[in-house]
Image 1 (cartoon, rainbow, N blue to C red):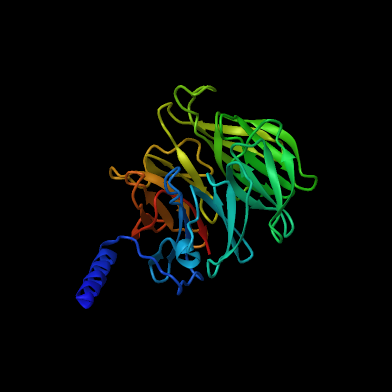
Image 2: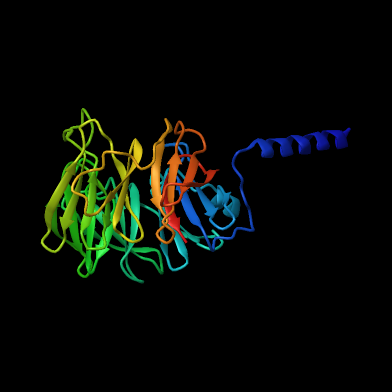
Length: 346
C-alpha cells in the first residue's frame, strides 16, 4: 500500500512538472553566454525572481536564485548591475541589493537598510552608487566590502537611472520631478541641474556623445501635473537641451534603448518603434507591432543587436519573452518570471 501511494505521488509530481511552463535548473547552470533577466514579481507578494537565457542553446532557466540558494530573492526585483564577476540584484520593496556570483548565482552578500533602491552604478573598484526613489540622497558603498561609506545630498530630489561620462554622473529625477542631475564623482557632490519635460526616466548616450532622455509626462490627476511625454536630446558639454521630440498627451512611451553601435534609438509606445539619432521627428510607423499583446519591457543585446521584448500578459502570470533579430525576424520565444524588468547581457 505504501509503495502504491509513493508511486502515485511521484507520478503526480512528474505530471505537474511537465505542465509547469517554467523550467528551473538547479546546479548545472551555464552563464557564459546569454542574459540574466530580473523579474519583478508582484508588489507585496515577495515573488520576484531571476532568470537566465542561454543564447547558444536557446534554453531558459528560471528562478535560479531560489534554486541555487534555497531562499527567495524578495519583493520587486527592479534592476541588475554587474561588476567584475559579481551580479548585483536590486530588490526594490525589500530595501536591499543582493550580490551573487555571476557564474554560479551563489549568494555572496547584500546591502541592506535602504528605503526603496532602484539602480546601482559603479564608479571604480572602491566606489559605487545606489539610487533610491524614496530618499533624496545617493548612497555610496564599497563594492569590495559592500559597506556603505557615505551619501550624496540631492537637494530634495530623488533619482532613478544613472549614466557616466568622464567624471560626471547624469541622473534622472523621475518621480514627480523635471530635472537631470549632474554629479561630480571625484568629490561626490551634486553640481548642477538641467530642466527637462516632466518625469524624466530612461537615458542613453549616442555615438556622438549626445544624451537622450525619455520623459513620460506624468499622469492625469498627478499633483505635479500631466503633460506631453517627450524625448530630449542634450548637449552635455554645454548642459543644454538641443531638441525635444514630443508625443501626444495620451501616449505613454517607455523603455528608451539604444543599439550597440549607438546610432539607433528604440522605445515602446504600445508597439516598438525605432528612430535614427539623426531623425528630425518621431517615427510614424511602428517597427514591431504588438498584435494586441502587452509589451512591458525592451532590451537590446549590445553585441548581436537582437531585441528582447517582454509580454506581461496580465501582470500576474509568467511572462513571455520574444527574441528578434535587429531586422525584426523572430528568433525564439520563451517564458520567464512575472513582469521582467531588466536584462544584463554576459
